[in-house]
Structures are given as C-alpha cells and as structure tokens.
Length: 295
Image (cartoon, one colour):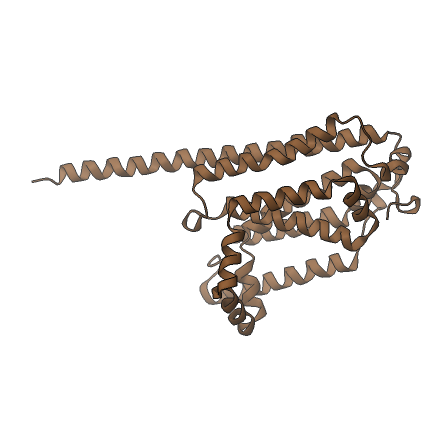
C-alpha cells in the first residue's frame, strides 16, 4: 500500500481523508445496533436505566475515536510516516478501546438483534465451552499475554510491512489491537459490583500491562538500526530520516502510553483509598451506634 502514489505530502494532509466502505459500513452498523438496543432498553425501563447516558456517550466517543484513527488524515499519513502509524495505534488502544469497554456494548447489541439471537447467545454463554472461554477472557494473565503478543508481533518489521501492503492483514492488525485492549479495559473499568479483580490487583495489573509498551517504545527510541525501510519514500517526502521517524514513533509509544497507564493506576489507587476510608467510616459509625444502643 505504501507506494509513492499513496503517500501524503506535507501540503496535502487535510485532503488525505480515507472513506473506506468496510470501515464506514462497520461503524454505521455497530452504531445502529447499539442505538436501537439502548432505545429499546430505555423505552422499557426509563432513560438512563440499564445503560446510563454516560455509557451511551462513551460509545459515541469510541465511534468518533475509531473514525479519527481510520478515516481522518491520520490513516493515510500513517502509511507515510511510522510515527503517525504509531499514533494511530495508540488512538485505537488507549482512546477507542476504553470508551467502547466502558459503554457496556454487549447487552444493547443483543437487544437490537432480537430474541432468537439473545436466546442463542445465552445458550452459548451457559455451555461448557462458553463458560471456559468466558473465564479465560476474564483472566488478567491471559489478557496480558494476548495484548503483549499483539503489540510486539505487529511491530516486528516483517508483520508490520505485510500489514501495510495488505489491507486485510492491516484490518486484522487493527482488530487485534482493539480486541485485546477492550479485554484489558473491561477488566480495569468493570463496576465495583461485577469486578473481575479487586482494586489492589487492578492497580498491579495496569502497572504491569504498561511495561511491554514502555519496553517497545524504549527499544524503538534507542535503536540504531533502521527497522522499517518501507517508510523510506515517506520520510524523504517529509524531509526527515528513517531513524528519526522511528525514534519519534518510540517516544509516542513510550511517553503518552506511559502517562495513560500511570494515570489510570493513580486513579484506581485514589478510588481504592477512598473506598477504604468510606468502609472505615461506616465501620466506626456502626461501632458507635452499637455502643450507644447498649442497655
């Protein structure tokens, strides 16, 4: 795909929009299903019930972030410069994926698809293979391994070049990033009543999960070998070098991603401390009431 005719010159960035029919169709269908399911849910239970307005807004934000990553000039410029391609990956993994995960998309989508699909989904969920798959995908260790493999494998020079040259492989790359990232963010963002792991374990999970991205970023930043020669024509067009472009990509992966992971861990820590203080206050209140109520 990254031949001279596909490259974006500095003066043509804002005209380099990508209106790929499969991407447009996918976003439209997903949005329609989610909206239909939410509308049905709110009609029966009331606005904000089942899926909150905030969750619906998260879904809209996820669609917008995906559109920015795959349809805006970011997409075609990512075929020109490795640094922008890395930025595209981060938008999918650290913006679109957490927004989709927070939007509770499964129930509204099933409601939109009708009773037969809901019944089939329940049978699959309750079957032995379905239970095993569900438990596996909720396992933080499994999610960590899957996400790490996806991140590192697609940034190896061979698979990276193949993805740029083959649109179907490129779509698989993006799907693997969004899918594994959604599993990660689903574990982290699940409400307290349905949490897969407690706050303390979640903090550790987020901290450890940020390490592969930091390691990849550091490797690309300090490497002296040009790993992605496929961008040679692009960097020449933009007046830079393959090594500088690679280093910029490493910094993009290293610093912004690190900020997101550390920020998430900090928020979880504050929530953990706040919940502990609240529980302690409730316990103390109960003790006082018990003491006052003694005969």
